[in-house]
Image 1 (spheres, rainbow, N blue to C red):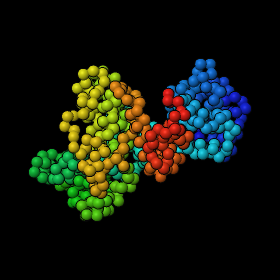
Image 2 (cartoon, rainbow, N blue to C red):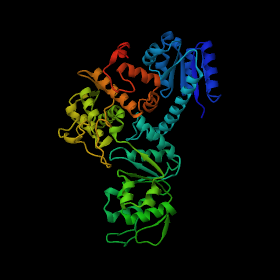
Image 3 (cartoon, rainbow, N blue to C red):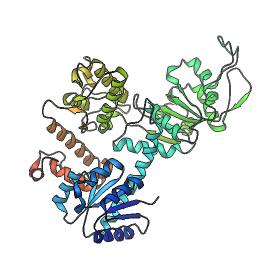
Image 4 (cartoon, one colour):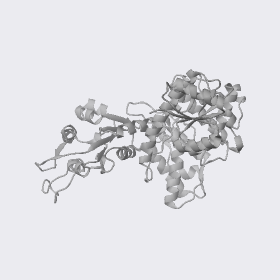
Length: 498
């Protein structure tokens, strides 16, 4: 799909922008140019382009800040400033405006081409993820995602949703596997048919076959009537098999037959039935290890693992925690008839350090507890955290006592550093600005570490423009080689109000 570009600038700059984008994109970009600011704001709100370029001379014209206005009316637009001076001054102006990046005039086609590539990738991912999130809108449970890690997961899930392929969702307990499965169903071709859930781990072994395939009267003790199984109940729709790794080996054979031939029999029956269902399976185990040990059939594993979707544990996408806190506060305040304005910085700081073995589900339990016990309109640390939260899960930094994953790896600060919380809904009693800088410094240093100091790759992983990242690195005293700094002289040159 062609990238939609809009620009608001003086005529000379507008001509240069249109020419550069046409040449850099080889004519694949659609370009809308505006000289009049009011017409530009109206047109951008109506057509919702992927990229908006704003001439710096239009900032604060007639008392209107176009960047702020566009961010409200077109939140998915990437906003870029066209400036006559680059360097630190442009970095500062870009950050003050809240823009994605800037283009220095006169334009260089290589820079424009790189920007087109960045925005094209950003827009494709945002479009896929928006569809998935909108599919869950208005429901009691919906997806909250802002981190690059979860954005990649949702992008993959959205692409797979349009097909009828079998999907295997992998992730620890409490990461939201059922939520993603339901979103895939709602976005897929079977959305108007049933979404049926069966949790294998919740069933006794002698009931699993009957639950999946149904039974006929008299087929076993207690079978007083014919009973439909989950495959039959999900006819035409989606069957979500949670904890598929717990399926006994004898029943794995019958499950494989359904996947291969689309047929099955009820327990105690000789009538072959057709199964018109899409299967989404989920597991919190390493099924490849179970295959090697002989506990899970290799042929069944290959059948269900057509599109693997791995949901990271909460400790690996901590940037989502502030948004999840905000979502859960609102949800449980409404549920319990409470007025909650926010949460203290101390509570947020401790949450950001916590290991979360129970992942998002555990975080929701914490926030629900805080809302229920809150004496005022701010959730405190003691209200959010149960008094028995101690030991190896208390803080991610406790590497020596931290639990190991299934590969025997210890979770500690190298893989589980806290990330920057959102300012929204957070109140401070002491040193909040310093805490915010600490969180951001760790987040950026970790991204740079993962990309071996490659700033361009780190910016893509974080979902920000490269210039924005370089500016924040200077502000926080970070370079691509040494990780977190102590502020440094470079940071002192930059206004502290950013």
